[in-house]
Image 1 (cartoon, rainbow, N blue to C red):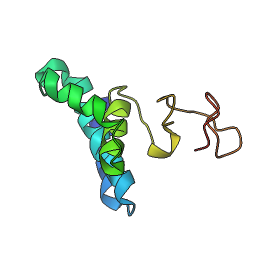
Image 2: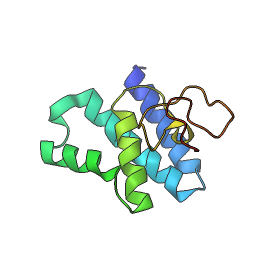
Image 3: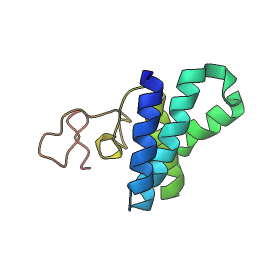
Image 4: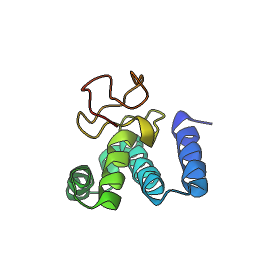
Length: 108
């Protein structure tokens, strides 16, 4: 099984069992980002890509979750919505005190 297939399977499973609707949206966006990263410009248009990227900055929490997930998926790496910082938009592998981004000190 390819790394892409493995990441997609993991994300789809987590999305389906997730009880928090925002986390579920994050995983949906993440899966779309994985597809874009894997297939490149053959998946979606540049306009769609731009809309998904911009969604992360939306005031609508659901749309923002989709956009943050999409950005995380573009890395083609396993990610989790709890470890994604809203301010510095970076995957945060370590959290100093469990609630603060170790990179920019935003309270998560």
